[in-house]
Image (tube, rainbow, N blue to C red):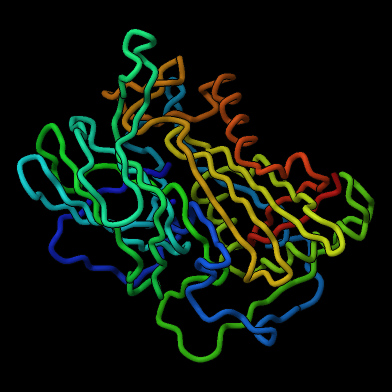
Length: 395
């Protein structure tokens, strides 16, 4: 369920993957392509999809709500000792020294999402990464915040961290095996790096349409239960009544899949906020083709903005689902008033809403930047239901 809260590193030797599915680690960034990973299990057949009538409008079929912990707020922040951590289990890691202040980190994909495409690792506060020496896959580079020196120091970089993209870390065959793809990074630091430290965050990944099973699967694929959601009949948003019905049928095809599971998990366990935007856009007519864009603003400043782009095909297993994340605040401390740096000696437990108008503007820019044109197309507003299904709303 994947900026994420700190993900501690584990010492090398043997990696033991526990056969368990953590609800908090279900989400994260994703992308399915035609030649990529559409599923880690057998794809469903027509016989494996069961339509069970018309969906009700109550219970699991009501709009999703989020129950947050009741915590005291002191000066806009939550006391550190009761900070409500959002746990993620997208990775398992090992770290070993390979020379003076040189290290090799291996990252294993243990996500329930699918294939991982990019990630970011921040060193602990007291350690500075000097150079990335190499990686076994993709492109891993040293990055950070720049521009603080103005014209006098244009190349100054603050908070250097390692960003890896162009990855394709395959999903595990089942949660209990943890046999997903792996990435090894070697790098040099300015001082000794302690094991079990650092902050690893998933940025993008490939979501499988079918859920990654908890245990090895045998026999026929499981039956998916699909309910028909009634679409509003009125022509709105540039869509005809027929196109709205087509759009709702396309959304219905995602029910009881990994996509609906992740939608519910992202909302309640990760962002801890209902989606700020849910939009279905018409891509083409005759036949109707649709794209969906969902965007979450996190409740806590230490969590990421999250967005999910969907390109829906007639066969939902051939649709593509791309999820991405970006941090509103850097790890390691509270955001300063200019919104561009953090106090590295503090711990950020701030509610994002306390950062005010400038952070709201930043969130809107991020939302628009990743919409892929859906917001400007003829379309309709949608909402996530408690079971992760998607429903068109009248306006």
